[in-house]
Image (cartoon, rainbow, N blue to C red; front, side, top):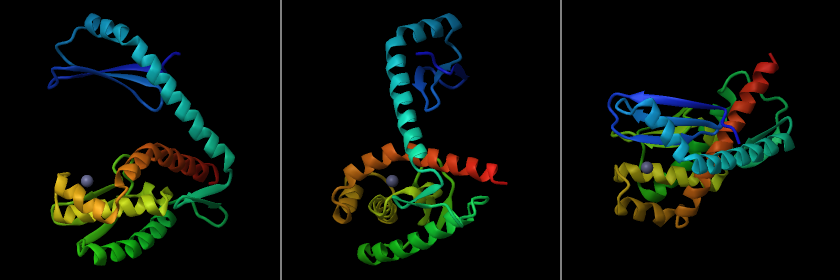
Amino acid sequence: MQPNSIKINKSRKSRSIRIRVDEELNVLIYAGKGFSDSYIQAFINKNEQWIQKQLKKQSKSKAEIQNILDAHPNQILQFGKWKSLEGIDLKTNTFLKKILLETLQLRISYFSELMELYPKKISIRLNRSVLGSCSYDNKLSFSLLLYFASFDLLDYVIIHELAHIKHKNHSTRFWNLVSKFCPDYKDKRTILHQETRLYRALYDHLLKQAKSSI
Ligand SMILES: [Zn+2]
């Protein structure tokens, strides 16, 4: 299987060499500037089997996501359930943001009372890899991609970020607090990790549809 491209990124700071295959089937090499081109080429050759395995894995999951999109024409996934796109203005993120914010506010106030932890502010950003974050002064930020996540996964993200109000780290005490309110947090974390790619694809798909409808 051929990669889409092989990109070599040289960095002044780095002293190591590492390799990654991304979602679009590109092979990415990150190397310190001390590594010669022939060394890098030999490194790629040495890792050929691993690259092939990753390319297969990535292309399989790309095809799976495409199947999901094809199976739901003119539909949008909202909190884990498919609904009709009819009447939804896709040209801006306003609709997604509004629904997500309303839902977050409701569920956060419920868990805030339960956990006795109260955020200073809640905001939504289009973050493609980080689904939630908590600032040093307890402002919570959530990714717009959570619009696609089912309620039980959304609740895990909320509990996780509220727990950061008390513990600004991922220590044992932090995870103990999370597990008190979300006992199966490990499973949910794994599922979310896998689903984030689908959420990104869903978002990009919506954008494309919005553009073609103008
Ligand atoms: Zn965290």
